[in-house]
Figure 1 (cartoon, rainbow, N blue to C red):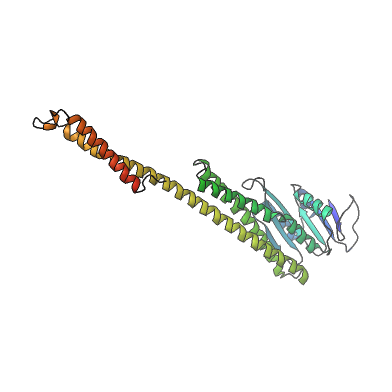
Figure 2 (figure 1 turned 135 degrees about the vertical axis):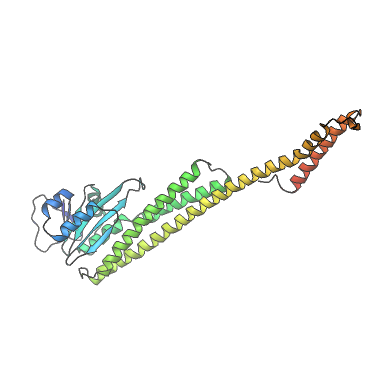
Amino acid sequence: MRYRLKKKLVPMEPGEAAIPGENLVEVMSREEYRKLHHTRYHDNLLIKNLENARYSRADLLKDCIIGTLVIPDKKDLLGGLLIFGYYMDQEKLVFIDDSGEVKNILHEIQREQIMEKTSISHLFFEILEFMVKDEAEFLQSYEENLTEMEDRIMSGQHSRIDFPASILKVRKELARISSYYGQLLNVSQTLTENYNRLLRDEECAFFHLFSGRMERLVEHGRELREYALQLREMYQSRMEARRNHSLSFLTMATAVFSPLTLIAGWYGMNFKNMPELNWTYGYMVCVFVSLLLIAGEIWYFKRSGWFRK
């Protein structure tokens, strides 16, 4: 799939010849790129980097820029990754993609955007911008989810079994997406350095602006991870408080019944000279004293706040 770049992406027909000097955008599979471009050093380097891609990167070579983009799938952040490579010089931008994601991105840009600049580097900037256009809203949804978790913790409505797993999953997802933002930040900063002088100053300014946006997203993601960590600590504190309350209740129950155990042990010795054993009212007095002790201890514990959660 090939496009001309004339303030907008214009699809080219199969077999249509390119005009010398015009800006072109092309999308091909890895196999197609390997067949058409395999003699130059940077082509082999790009294929090698693409086969072992684990993160987004940009490499500034003598007369071109090559790199990979590794995008987490927002529907399954801990699962699959969308991986594609790119080659860029002053007149050509080639994407190596087997997933079809680049075609979708270019189709959306073709349908929605008219670019003031028609340079290849500006189009690449527009593609990066398109990739992160909804990220603020995406992170906002995570913040709302975490706020809802906090409300459940404070109201005691959280599930003791599911909550630790849920908060761990959120922290892993935020770590993945924050790493993605950090990688795009590195890509844009590398392009801004422009030590191969492939980009003009005004084009470097675009990537500088993109770097600022990525820094804000990285910071937002870091804050959400810290928020999730605070929620986990809050949950653990609540669980610890509940355990302490249970232990306090057991201690209180032990304290209440200890005098009764003493009385039972004392009068269970059955010595001959224990006058209470032959006293007509001995049993009733023992019951009354036991109830009085229980009532007195319960009153004391309640006054001391032991029944409060």
